[in-house]
Amino acid sequence: MLNFKTIEYDSQNNQIIILDQTKLPEKEIYVNLKTVKDVYNAIMTLKVRGAPLIGVVAAYGIVLSAGKNNNTRKILKDAEYLKSARPTAVNLAWAINRMIEIVKNKKNQNLYRDLLAEARRIEKEDKDACKNIGLWGAKLIKNGFKIMVHCNAGALATSGIGTALGILYTAKSMGKKFKVYSCETRPILQGARLTTWELTRNSIETLLICDNMAATYMPEMDLVLVGADRIALNGDVANKIGTRGLAIIARYYRVPFYVAAPISSFDFGIESGTEIPIEFRSADEIRYFNKQCIVAEKTKICNPAFDVTPNALLSGIITEKGILRPPFKKKIVSLK
Image (cartoon, rainbow, N blue to C red; front, side, top):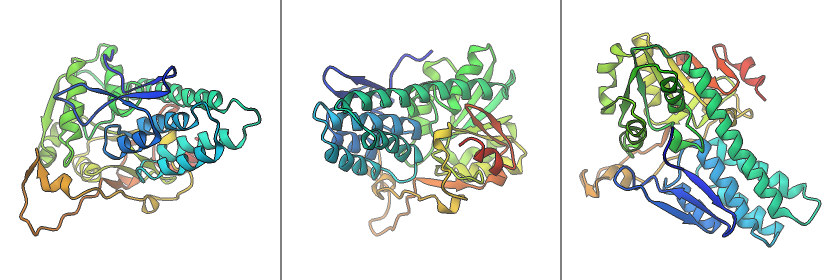
């Protein structure tokens, strides 16, 4: 189905090979991450992005740290360093904490081998979760549907076929016909640059719209599908900025609004979205467009990377274990 890879671990040279997503759609360039600092910078600069993929890459980052030296103190220090790369996506800390447990519980000398095995398990779990999310979510799609998506929750955001877009790939493989409307997703344009690149490469009819066109086209939609970076126990969802506005518009026009996310994106330690840390990024992401300054010199800029969509606006959450419908809390707790 897909003709690109977001990540590959090279065990011979102990390095991670990633698709540099900052170069898309103009160039398909793969880069080698050889150090923990390389991994940190790749996550920070969005060369690697998408909550599930960040978790997988971070896990392999701990493998880079271990190398052949088994220096426990260094590995644990590097783990905390990688955790700080981005605050909102819970998969980052989730994956690293699993790797830390391997380090702390290690009873023999082959730490590198066991960390590599755990990283590979995390990657396989991600791929399997994407596949099953696709199967559950595809049940919602009927022939002739018009579906709106936001940001990029596809294969570029995971090590598998994706979450929200994985549902589309699965539906297509079943022979279903539909159109996808992709919001551009300012300010980094993940919808314009990445989602359209993915979908058109996989022969899915895709129409790009500016973010402020969503209300105009929403009455035509049959479904809205988005991903998630962190989900609280009550079902509040942190996702790319603009998701909450899209959910509000969808509710007004009575269009079903679904979140697609693996269980690794649930934060079982927080009660609601008010506890989710929201990352604020550089003002230059808004100040410049195509390397050209587009604002007055003294303008102050707000640049939150995510917003939180209240659970009351969701029709459901599509996970690898099924579709959760409101009220969410007991059903989310049962996923633990």
